[in-house]
Length: 400
Image 1 (cartoon, rainbow, N blue to C red):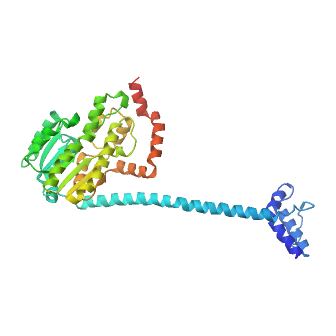
Image 2: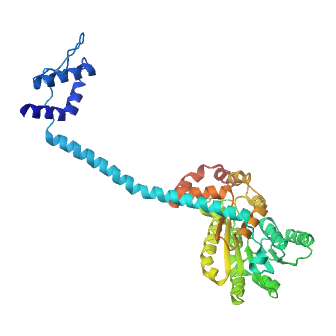
Image 3: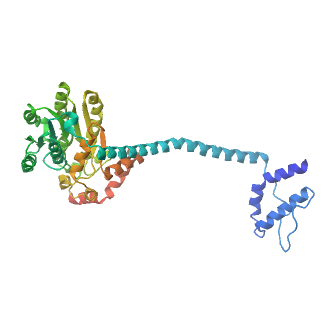
């Protein structure tokens, strides 16, 4: 029994014994192992191994003392504790991992489904809403013009609302010639003006008709440092992009609900509203507002027969880039730009089916990035790196 205990103690002391053995540089690992085996054999009264010819082995006169049982137990307890901690950490992190995966997979699945529906089952707004008239803001060019033409192509009369300039005059004449059997009305107003000064003209032009399709599309971008941009310019940008949708939506929504008519309220937002965007602070701020306004309004009016859709386009080949101020970032995105008719198709085919639509590769990738990175973290990263970009340095040079 004593011999057995000695062997057990020796095995328990193996980690320390091997560590001490490493100090004997003249002893090879093989030789030391053989010597240890011979020692154990002598303890139990038999030869553990046969001698090896021509092998020189230096063995210490006495083996290191066994490691106390309490120390071994402590080491085992520590190892178990570490394993348990790692296991618990794994399971505490795992839910977040799977939630993240579910978020991305769910989003990608939604995008694939939406595009399948878009491609296979286009929507005719005239039939869906029994619509006679539609109103489009920012209708003189770009996405607004494409929407006006698509409405006319479906046999719907159109009110074109835009800045009163030569562009509106030219578009109005062009679209009348292109669709001679459709009625058109134009309202030349400045949607960037304060206190909704544009509403009297819009109300006057639509008092005798029933508008059930409203496309809030007007908007533009101002680039540069906020403090270096004239306040009047920033306020006009803010009103045109964001606040003008309030009185316009309120007026026509009230009439739709009162007449118990089915209708559609559409909004053109932007993926720029997903993340902080320095050097164009008004644009992303207003687009973020549009998205939340539309998605908050949708549940209020859905059960009353009015649908809401907000679209986040990827870069479009429109006059948008004329106001980019030469920003390298915007110019880089320009290579991915598509025609404005693509957005018109997305909006029309989303009507009554989806509240939010993300269009194009840039928007989809940016949405996935915002799912992978926390917004607060992303904001910190942008704040600490923006000054190193070429655009930042470019505007710094302009203002020096």
